[in-house]
Image 1 (spheres, rainbow, N blue to C red):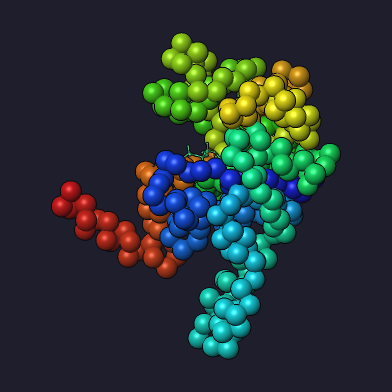
Image 2 (cartoon, rainbow, N blue to C red):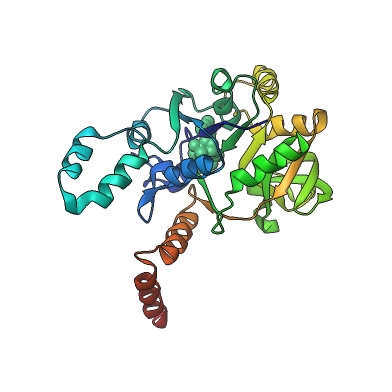
Length: 294
Ligand code: UTP
């Protein structure tokens, strides 16, 4: 079944990158010449996704503006032949995909944010791209497409995973997995933010997931059982999915930049700048020069 819809949760508070994210959502933080979330929308579109729902909240209206036409700006640029290239770039930003928005209203966790997408998704399998995880595949095979292809082959949910350093597993989640084929594994259990004793492997879910619409039933039940004042973890829902319908972990081919983390933001800017067609050479020379004094 062709996967045509995706959800990008972008309603978190972004406390780890304050004060940068105080009035600018972390998903709008810049990577060289585009906000982070544009790379994510482009990745979804390159995977064949046509309709994208971005989950926002108060103060994130700039995300909506970014994917809308800016008629005054486009009009001004269109009148100046020397600005033709930038006119095309600005205009295309509004046409990358069909982008829709809904507000989460209360920040009750990733699972709660994803549940907001139920009416938009309906009964189809869909992709989830976390709004603060920019994942680059520099060979032209977007990570969402890698997961979609696996979903098509096996008909089971797929989570994008990477091995993280053991000391960091407690910040993410830990997966119990057995080999399936190539970079694919069967998932048997997932523990969110494990203690040292609970670590089953260093594989953690990083930013990309393709799941059947069954997850909404699980999320509704889990939400009803979530005590007031606590977050609804999406990981718990994925654990249920793994046990009841099966779930595949894919050690994806790509580099993930955590835009909810200061070092992640710096790494993204550095690596994208080094590969940038206009800036790459100059930036490399600048870094080499700078490194002499370090
Ligand atoms: P994070 O856990 O990194 O989000 O969620 P956060 O709450 O913004 O981070 P910190 O810890 O305060 O810095 C991963 C993704 O899920 C979204 C976030 O926007 C991010 O893209 N999210 C998280 C929601 O949409 N709603 C939520 O209630 C929580």
